[in-house]
Length: 170
Image 1 (tube, rainbow, N blue to C red):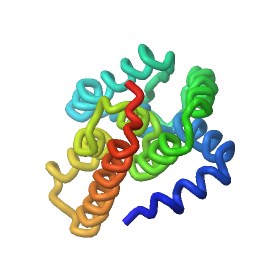
Image 2 (image 1 turned 45 degrees about the vertical axis):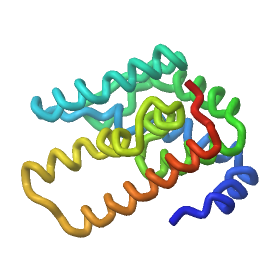
Image 3 (image 1 turned 60 degrees about the vertical axis):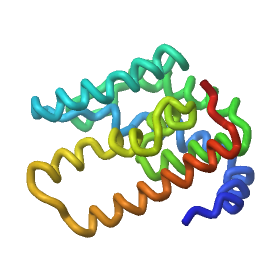
Image 4 (image 1 turned 90 degrees about the horizontal axis):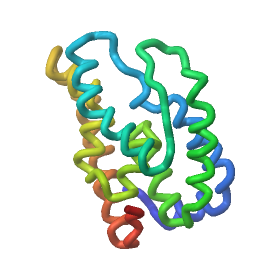
């Protein structure tokens, strides 16, 4: 269970470090690394591209995707823009975004989650799109399923934290 008071304290004490980390983390965001397998890539395009489109439209964040492990250099400017956006957030929204990004391995998904554009369930499904695709192909791994449930529970708690603080930034 997340201790939101402790999380807020940590974020308050380390705000610039967290902003820098999240901005750097955006360069390696899950949403930017697409599969070269056609079926999975089609799912990613259908489900991830609308997130990237919203971020481009709403926050002027234009991230390039890749099918390999090379980081697109064009994304560095968007990382700077993302850091500037993060600096506009007060403590509670930044804490929520940080906690969600850590669980999702995606500060970009966490941004849409914070904005109220995606529910905890929706953002979970997007973050674990590849893993859940693999489960359908090869079967379930109990340890991985247990970890996903912990993350799902954390996201539900973060969603309540966001709603209780009325932090949606639409």
